[in-house]
Image (cartoon, rainbow, N blue to C red; front, side, top):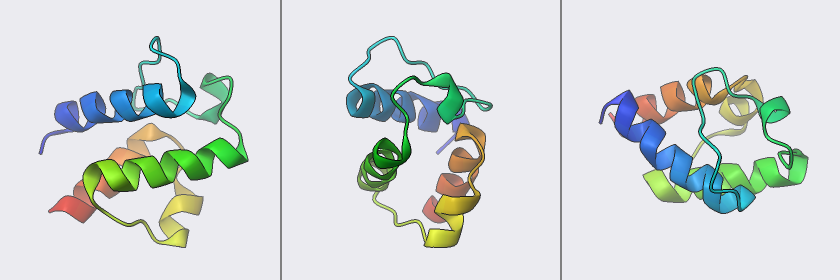
Length: 80
């Protein structure tokens, strides 16, 4: 799976979790860029991403993701 396809699927997940059809995530997108992205929504987001890609992040991965690009890197590593 290529980064472009992962971003398309992530955009869908982000839009569903945050109930905002205008969200378009990029490599550098962080919680500061999305108004409702707080610690509770972060948990909901991680669970939704895990379900979408049928993967499971470990706690270290979740706590060290700095932006959506980091998330994509970890998704790629998991689905290979």
